[in-house]
Amino acid sequence: MPTLMNRRDWLRTGAIVTGGLPFLSSFGSFASTGRTSNPNRQLSDAEFERLAPPGLKARLFANENPFGPSEKARKAIVDNLSSCYQYPFMHFDELTSKVTAYEGVIKENLLFSSGSSPLLLATALAFCHGGGNVVAGDPTYDDLPERAESFGATWKKVPLTADYKLDLEAMEKAIDANTKLVYICNPNNPTATAVDTAKLKAFCERVSKKVMVMVDEAYIDYMPDPATATMIGAVKNGHNIIVARTFSKLYGFAGLRVGYVIALPETIKKLEGLTPGAFSISGPAVHAAIAGYQDKEYLKTALAKTNESKEFLYKTLKAEGYDYIPSVANFVMFPLQMESERFVQEMMKRGVGVRSWKFNKKEWCRISIGRMDEMEAFASAFKEIS
Ligand SMILES: Cc1ncc(COP(=O)(O)O)c(C=O)c1O
Image (tube, rainbow, N blue to C red; front, side):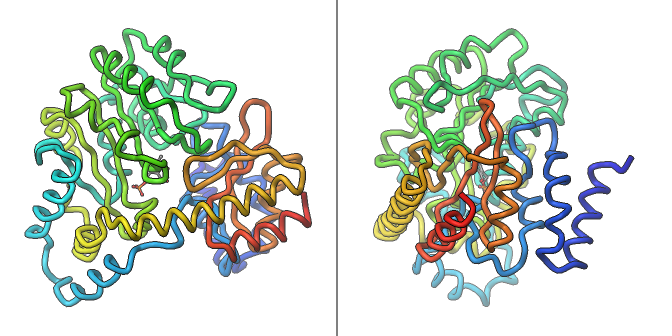
């Protein structure tokens, strides 16, 4: 019996040798193996990326922002290319000052990294190594809970509410003497729903007295008022929570890799020992982040384009008789009327990459919001098979 690793490697080789679409016959069987213990999601982003045929017409599977990075960020990269041979230490302070000034925190509250993923990993390692449990929604962004599982903890999965939001009440009830961490992804991936801000604030203030709470705000920039929705205020008020942020989404930096956490100084110290921090960010990415941070004009335009594409998607789904979960982020989840893995394969054959889930006894598609040409490619493929 081959191990999962062997199977992955075999598949990767197969995909390269066959050069794209022919590998799709293997896609279904691989897909059903899953990544780890999570039966809801069929493939991780990285696995999906490896399997996606070259020349896709629409890349709607990784919740990226195809409108980014901003002109200011692009210019900063080009302007600083010739200094790429230098370690970028001396620019970390400028980036730190920008974020601390905007958020009203001190530098001891802040830890940067090459994207937020290494900080989710460090958090799982810091709190879940060696056992206990992590309380998290189901489905949610499974990176941290799965890391926690690999460090020996159990993922206490709490189903979502009837309107597909994290069930804060049930999550609080699920906390027990062995709970090491509560992970809140808000807005939640893959459902693109957000919980009520006042309820979340009260939850964080209460629960963080007993156990560490991490609030992953990767998609918060897509919300109408991120400054009100964020839980950074709770950190400023001395509560023991970790807020994770990333430039990978509305800033369009997924390939540049910049993210950070804001937490109490003692938590930052704990995490610092488990990650190279800012030193893992490349020079061009540091310069781009300095130039692009809180570039309101750019953020407004990228958001408007995202919303235009989202409205088009909503209309397409409605016209074909499909329902969807109203989204506050750059992706939309909708229930399928066919088996989800087959749906993904059929869309892939038509050059459109989307993702599938299974939960609440339903088959689901998660579609990331792309440029209008990508949404149109989705619409014409969808009309053929819906
Ligand atoms: C909820 C959530 N958190 C964190 C990440 C990781 O993002 P990055 O490592 O690019 O900052 C993602 C990526 O899709 C995500 O969806």
